[in-house]
Length: 323
Image 1 (cartoon, rainbow, N blue to C red):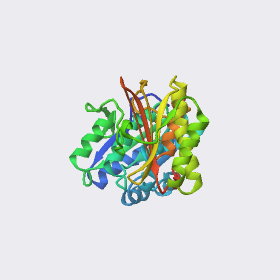
Image 2 (image 1 turned 30 degrees about the vertical axis):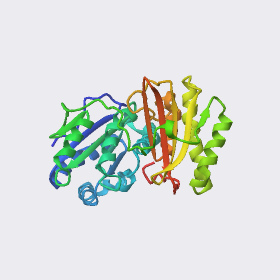
Image 3 (image 1 turned 180 degrees about the vertical axis):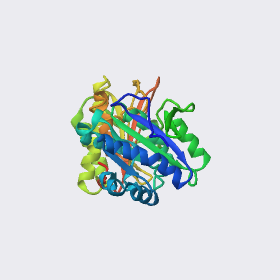
Image 4 (image 1 turned 90 degrees about the vertical axis):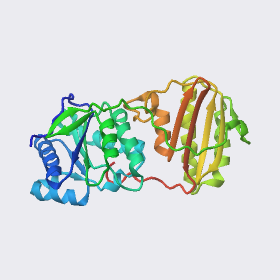
């Protein structure tokens, strides 16, 4: 079987998928991808099932130790955090990689966050990792995934590997923002204790900390939540919006903050999901999304709303071994 190839230019994000239904088919895809990367001096990261990793290690022999192996659990994190970890991995190794290319073979996560979260991550990678030199293959095992998941993969990946060759996916859909599951708060008009932000950053910070303080432990969780809200407000200010309703309250085991302005924002797909060095204009919301458990952004002719949430039992999120 030929080495997987792509028509994409060097030092640009390549996002491919491959469907396999047997151990032999997995090796026919993964082995040449890994071997060719090692031969070229490109870092190779593999996150797959324990059984698949053993298959690959047995065939690679001594070269298996040259591959960066990552537990699948490291991919069980929110899409923005996962994209950030992959970006850090690329940043760490690109200086020594030919063409700044690093390779990632990532078996779709079948862990706690589930199919919906991975589907969001797959679609978002096309935006959040654009401009990096990551070459990423996502293999889907037909013995595990249903037909619907395979169809979702075809829509999320610009290319599919067929007999080792990259072919454009006719079903690929240009990514659009996929919203998270909202906390379903009542309309702001029905809420009590809303803070009216009119440019006073000290006052809004005091309000946020006062409301979040009794709901979050430990103390650093309160500070992090305050930073997340502050970054979102700073983004609004940077875009000429200096009036907003701010509301902090508990909801469904979370601490939620809603910011609403009557002025709309122009929001491109997956807005705020790209790291600052790739998209400096989105720095504020990128930081907010990294800190929080959930972030939703919407805008129309009636105005814009930013809603963010963190767990009431917040604890710092580790980055595992991926980055």
